[in-house]
Amino acid sequence: MAPLVALEMVRSPIAGPLTPAPTELCKLATVAAVRNPSKEAVIASVVPVSTAVAEPEPARSARVLASAGIAERRALKVSLVCAESESPSPLQAIASAATTTREFSTIPAFYSISKWLAVFDSGAPVGTPTPGVNCSNLVVMLPDIMPPFTATTKTSPAGFPYAEFEARIARRDFRDMTRDVLPTPCMIVDEALFLRNVKFMADQTKAAGIALRPHVKVHKSVDVAKVQLAHGAIGLTCATIAEAELMSRSGLQNVMWTKQPASRNAIVRAIALSIEDPTFLFVIDDPLVFHWVQQAAAAADAQVRVLVSVFAGMNRQGIENGQPALELARKVASSKNMTFEGIMAYSGVAAHTKTFENRREQSAKDLAGPRETVELIQKSGIPVNIFSGGSTGTYNMDHENGLTELEAGSYVFMDERYFIIGGKDDPATFTDFAGALTVLSTVDSKHHPNQATIDYGNKAGVRPTDKVKGMPGLTVSSQGAEYGLLSWKDGDKDIQLGDRVEIYCTVLDDSTSYYDRYYVARGEQIVDIWPIMGRDTGRSGAAWR
Ligand SMILES: Cc1ncc(COP(=O)(O)O)c(C=O)c1O
Image (cartoon, rainbow, N blue to C red; front, side, top):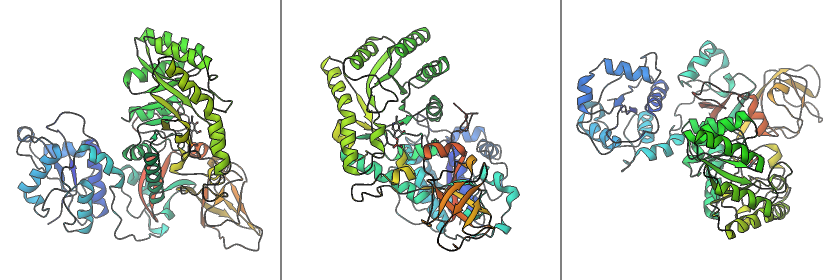
């Protein structure tokens, strides 16, 4: 008897949105089915009996498939399972359905989705039932949902059906999709290292008593943000209104935009987003921008949540601390269209200051003024809910400087400019987080001694400070728009035409803008694709401003 694979909860008896969306669950069914087509996959629809009667099979399964974007029924057997009653929880409804229908007979009790996938992969019921699983648990489980592939056979590139590449990605069919079949240059996320980074930062900030509102500028990915939120992040920080729109319109809340709206376009969009998503926040660092936003918000009858951005050692943004910042805070707090939320103070100089002790000193210096400003505002009777700032470099010191929350971003992937700042235990290398993202590149040409040409050129973001994974003696440089150069001094390295190399980028904030997706790798196997800037929005890519 084939075990249950996935669920589609079309209509929940309880109120409120279902997360993940029913279509995502359906996609999971597809993933599970294509992973092992010899097994039977079941999409279980939980509906009150009355609905099922009104729309019997096969019309119902056709609609379920269509809503999940599944064109073909290959490898999928769809069956309908009805909950017998309006249960208090949709998952309890599934559990009760599971015990009353033949298809579920091999499942002794109710499993979480990830366990069900494990059951599917192993071919036998395993593990302990998870009691009390609910929809919010599902969100947490999504990133970990894929159990290890049991049979990872490395495919020869010659055997891979390249004509189907994009179609397979569209239906999330990653069978035989190993690193060696990917088009290059492309970005690869090492899933295990990425998750380790996310968990480590979550644990460290929790232990230090500081909230985490991670900056998305480094990844620009809804999927990455979801993992960060699932691990306890209180919201997200964005550099552009487009990033904020992307995150918020993907259903992610408490998005903070750290650049003030200074153009008509940006003001209109910031106000529109505030109306659409009352959890959205943005900064203002100038009385003139306060005036513009105030006028636009009043005209739209909107309420916007504002932080005052203050100077924190970087001549890029931030009103002068002390009296000027207090006056701006007063204006915001007394505006009937604005809610004053607090202070944003990004100490970008401290972020990349070398050695732990120097960095700690720099950060304390940069945040001394903002800290006094916070006290001044509080003394004036205005509550300061948020004191935000910090970075990956200062993640383990900024709780000492009064910040209530940390805006660190790079830690998810890490880049070369961060490795060289040195850590608490190693003054030469910052090893707290692992390099989880590389650019995969192919050796295109090799005719000259001590050098090889790769396809990682200017259009792929090549920089002379990039490093080759596992080959420290190699130098990376540009040979033009589509060409990069690997060179070395000591004799002939074993680099051949057609070889693949992986590059650690210098500045990922920049480099991720050159690409439109991450290939998520579990070892050699690709297990997911995460779009960069864009998902069901009709707009995508780095040019979306
Ligand atoms: C406003 C702001 N906050 C926080 C960060 C911290 O990011 P990271 O941890 O990537 O250094 C940045 C990075 O540029 C930033 O611009």
